[in-house]
Image 1 (cartoon, rainbow, N blue to C red):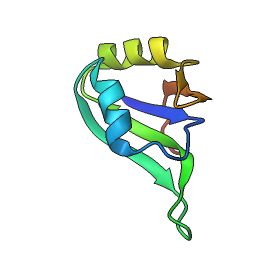
Image 2: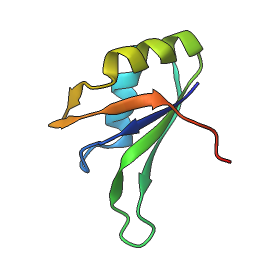
Image 3: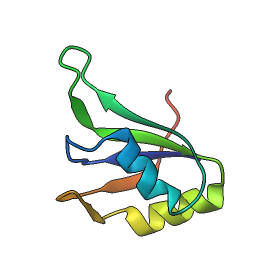
Length: 81
């Protein structure tokens, strides 16, 4: 399952997010999206999890949760058109 995580603190690192998500199941990849010119985080990421059930549970429990001072938006990522 591909999961979108938004409204992240700009200081959050990929390893931080991976640790949070691994509480729910195996994480295949974590990618924080960054600005091409400055290299700074844009405040959102995509996370892939092996198990859809684990992904669904993570979404249900983490959406609206506070992490590093920000309220996260966590939902299933939509495919690009």
